[in-house]
Amino acid sequence: MRRVNKWLSMMGMWSFLIVVAVAQQPPVPPMAEVETPAPAPGRLKTFEFPDLPKTLAGAVPSMTVRWPSGYDPNKKYPIALWLNGGQGGKGGPATHLVDADKYICIGLPLFKKPARGKASGVEAVHVDYKDADTIWDAYSVMLKKLETEAPNIEFGKGVAAGFSNGAHTIGVLLSEKTQEIRRYFGAFIFVEGGYMLKKTSAVKGCPILVLAGEKSWAHEQLGFSSSPSLNARSFARKFDGDLIVMEGVGHDFPSAQYAPKIREWLKQKGF
Image: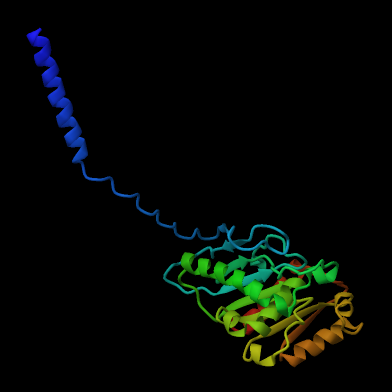
């Protein structure tokens, strides 16, 4: 019996020492924040922004980025932005319109301020000046994210291009958020749209390229005359821009056909 008591006494002592030892262990340090991996050259990467308002297409906003094939974190790269027409879809970069090895190519969705009443038809989709704050509030968050991923952006030397409602979005931002958009972009390409741009001062010193379908109905639909090439010519002349009439084309953008001309134009303009 004495042996049993002695054994229990020893076990109790060891248990006490183990508890004390554990209690005296230094606290486990919090897990270190995982370092963001370097951009993968030539790869696409999509970032989602669930905290932003839904896009014009009713989706969770996302930004798709394509890094140059020979991406060097010690070099500067301008941004090449593409905006789709219509409701914008998810948005994706148009890498074939620029020298994709010289640009960080991105695609963004479209946004529109929610209507108070029920909007329908063109009014429900068409981007207007009143949408500028909604659009830029979202784009500024997305572009700031891009800056954290690629801190070597070359500001003011980017190219912003869009088709139809995407082009209208660029025109609206240039008219209402001139300094903000000019911080990133210095050349602008309007395909079958963009006629929301009103101020010549907004694009002073910037190369402008306008592409218009020879058989397009969009210009007449939006309150312009029935001669799209003439309207586009007037628009391009007003902003000291260049015009490409897409022969036999309606409200469309056969980008593969006209991409070489766009790339050549950018090269001539120093972009």
